[in-house]
Image (cartoon, rainbow, N blue to C red; front, side, top):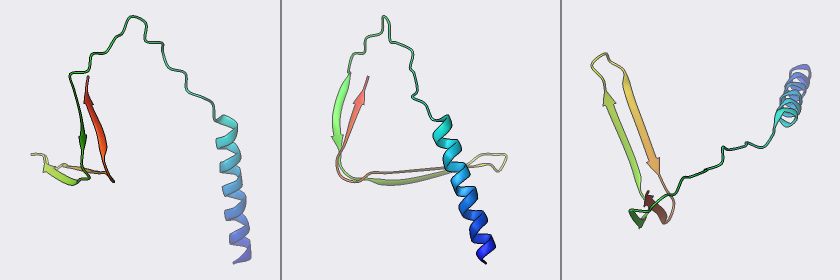
Length: 76
């Protein structure tokens, strides 16, 4: 059991070091010439929604959305 725990700790440390070494900020493309115009804005109350859809070739599409408290929404 002790040997297994040692390997788990070493593997976790290696993954953490690798993740920290390769982490860098993401650089976005500047929005030159882009302007957005809000069409609608509002607030939604808390919700919990689950949807499913079965395609003709037996593939299943699942979707779940939920929030806690009020959420802001905007259509741009």
